[in-house]
Amino acid sequence: MTSMNRGSKIWPVVLAAAVIVVLAGSLGARLIARNSSAVMPRAPAASVPNPAVLQVADLEVPCWTCPSNQDWPLRFQTDLDLLAPLGNGPANAAEWFALFAKDAGPRAGDAMAALGRRVEGPEWLGKVLPPDDPLLLEAEPWCDQATMKFYPEIFELDGYSTKVANLLLPLNFVRSWVARGLTAENPEAAMADFRRAIRLGRLLRQEDVVVISDLVGLACIHIATRGVYQRARADGDLELALLASVVLGEVAPQRLRTMEQLTSTDLLDSFDGNAEEEVELRLRPGKLDAVIEAAESSPDRRFRCEAIVGLNIVRSLGTPEERNRAFESLDELAGDADSIVAEGARWSRDQPTEAEQLKEWAVPQNQK
Image 1 (cartoon, rainbow, N blue to C red):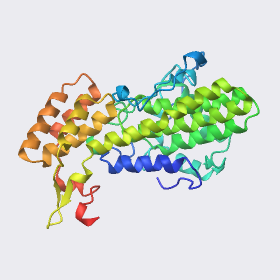
Image 2 (image 1 turned 45 degrees about the vertical axis):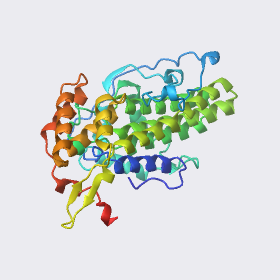
Image 3 (image 1 turned 30 degrees about the vertical axis):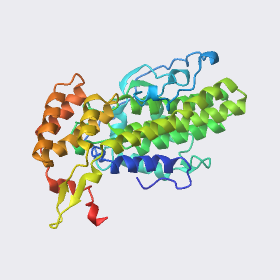
Image 4 (image 1 turned 135 degrees about the vertical axis):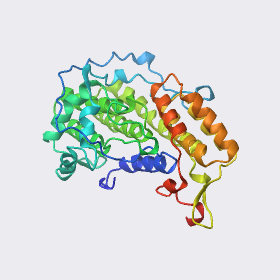
């Protein structure tokens, strides 16, 4: 992910978050392309309802720092249907986005070619696709679908080798729609672009399996809502601007809590190199307790999945006592009511991890 426009003021924040996710133990975020059919799906017809009616008197600023709300799931507390409700299309939007997966996706070349067609947009957006770019137009009806599910319909759950989509593509679409909306003469056309971008962010967060996909979805909502705020303020729609500002205020707490959650359960600080330059696992005090707690009771599925992958490593490379505790937790989670969690737990329980595999991503502390 090195082709970002470095003039963008938003992308460094997203990139920094992504880097932290990877370094903080997100072993399931390696981008490996899907071997897909050459048949190109078309988005079925869909409609999008109007936003829910905003009652300003009922609008509240969520208190993310209040002690009583520390167990909130990392989701917007403000109803996003007030800004951009999802469409009702019957197709799985992931079918189309998976075609652009890097390396082997049948349309990976189309995604790369689109990068070359970008032009300079507003300073805070960086490079964007032209308003009438064919790929941008092709993507629009896919954002009107009601669902986006990659796992296990398209990508199988495979521990730290789990595949993810080409997440640069939705970011480029969102920036491009927002840029088009900011320059549109018609306020309704502008809001249609902003709302489409928000819907795409909501779709990316819908499945809640991979942390990096969720962070990119959050970034999409952030960028698009900023567009709503700027346009609403310019048009004198102060109620809509107020709603957008409340939503924008919820972005940073979700991002920060994501980092806190991952830091509390990552195993990066638990790897050391020995004299033979082998990677050894030496868990810090309380680390296994934190990982087990996240795997068993986090209100967000993606953090449970991350912790479950961590338990796979402990189950294979920890001390005998640590291995037993990790195995017992995974064995119980293998029967979890959440089928995604259960499948991930079975993989982590049954697939041993060799220390040699960790050298691909874990740098021994004594070599830093």
